[in-house]
Figure 1 (spheres, rainbow, N blue to C red):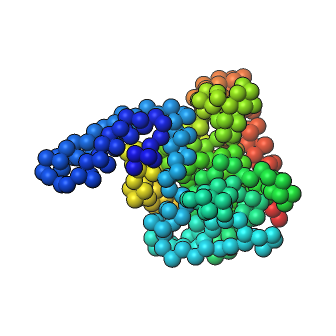
Figure 2: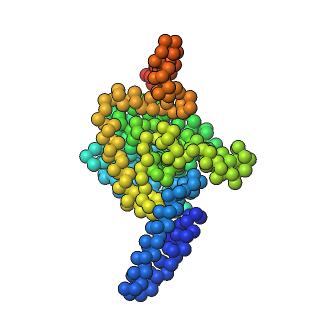
Figure 3: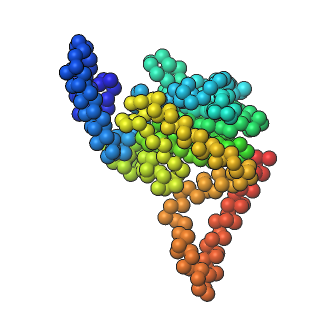
Length: 359
């Protein structure tokens, strides 16, 4: 327990060490009472520390070695999971798992990154760095789910797509780009949850959906803070400043409209209580899957398209309140309408091109 604490959890580690020492001694009523008080002290410290985490500390929590991965959630939330292997072009990629399963009364497809635990499994799964065959396997499984009208649940947890020479030779950029296009047009509900690290295009290659959920202490960014610091400051030690500037926390991304909902975590993070974290994820999935499934296919596709069309417009689009003021008078009305119509026409053109490409 104490050995798994993070650098900013030093006060918690000290108390956990005391608890572990006391648990080795013979049980007495006095010792039991002391253990109860120490455990309450741990909860108090966790509440104080986790209520004011910095962005860099959030990164450390998202990368915690005991944080639940896709298969941890699969074993607790879904039943009858049957894994699908291979992309039918090159081979299988253990860094991405796909499989058919039951979620409550629904038949669903589960897709997600898998980092692995222990040295051997981490190497086999490439530490969650997916290769192109992983993204193509995921798309093959998603198209199978679409054919049989099964909703799709995606867990995102990867540092990035694998940048090795073999990955580039087999077209990792093309594989991710294809997933972006095809996932935008899947006619079944797609619920995405960023459960750990959402790193760069490696995350986005599985993260196109109707609802984008994010666990409270997960992170989602275009580049890891260390990489950003190395590029902008020529110093990877500026990673804390980079994490702050990147706006990678769930709270920041909800405010920017990148995600739709924050899924709470147990006190101390999902790694502190995987069972409780799984129950929270399950409840959020039930609600969002129900909402997405109650919509018509056409309405769901349009909302999905508009969701991603709007991303990046923070600070650029005319606020609805300002637009209402501008259209209230003579010349302002024509100007306001022109501003409102422009993006809509562009969206229609872009969507037409995407559908033509798909056909």
